[in-house]
Amino acid sequence: MEQSRKKYKRVVIKIGSSILCADGVNWDKDVLNNIAEQVAQLIRERCEVVIVSSGAIASGMHVLGLKTRPKELPQLQAAASLGQNLLMDAYGQAFRKNKIHPAQILLTSEDLDVRKRYINAKNTLLELLKMGNVVPIINENDTISTEEIKFGDNDRLSARVAGLISADILIILSDVDGLWDEKKETIRLVAKIDAKIKSLACPTDKKACVGGMITKLEAAEMAVNSGTLCVITNGRKKNIILSVLESPETQGTMFLSKHSLSERERWIAHTKPKGKIFIDDGAKEAILKNHRSLLAPGIVNVEGDFKVGDPIKIVDKDGVFIASATASAASVEMLQVMGRKHPKEMAHRDNMVIVITGED
Image 1 (cartoon, rainbow, N blue to C red):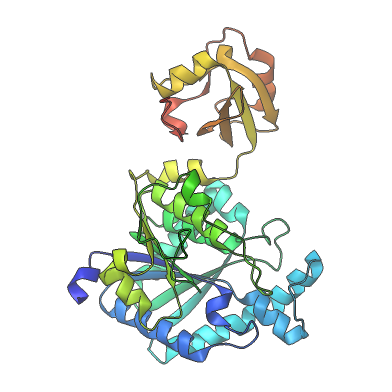
Image 2 (cartoon, rainbow, N blue to C red):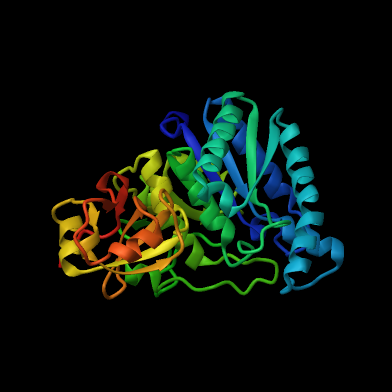
């Protein structure tokens, strides 16, 4: 079985608060130690592993004696600041038993949205993975973030990280066996995340957590659209990570990956847009069917304040999402020339990632 998991050379594992703290307060050392043992085994097999872990705010809540997750931003930041050290200390104790060194990386959305910082984060992670006996442990930098401390941030962060390092598989460890159907039975395989699949998700009601199946599906969709296989499974099962890598179609819900995007395409597709461009039916057809760049005559409206090179969202006149792109002109210029003949492209086809096929 070891041979079957060796085809996954680079693995991202997302670990939620409900896995680390079953009662919402205390560390589950048995689960944590088992995770560390599995990751150590994979590293010995020359697999590269990155962990995206929640748990800092939950740990801080314990220190502060809070029973429910704070709603005020300063309290959230304070809890994260107190808890982050405890989180890494717990990981450190578990991994050092297995002669593995955890490396802490705290990220904000800007670290992945700004192109230069995105490349820097990627280079740091790849350098750490080269060291062989190191496991990077990533968390949202909740102590300074003002916008990203919200529902399910680390689910989406794990998918961004998987795309950042071109991971072969993203394993999202939850406290359920996977995505359930209407009969509360686990769906083993999802070939396409459509409206029916999304309707099966529901939010969490756990006091220390912000994630739920909704955000896990969002993360899975982001991962598979980038070419990364994704599995949502029960992280409290013993040796579940090794089991997933040996037989992903039987250990939770497996989401099949689609065509692989290039590194730059992943950044364009997943970075928060600075603006929105509304286009007419002619421009929509030119982009979707003829694979053309966006020209000024096809633009009917521009929203947002952006400059050349910023990520933007292209939508049709009804607001349906067509493509992600980088702007070839600033928003001020687009507003001046939209609807008119103009020699300059507003968004070049080479810097555009289509999100729908354009078929009826």
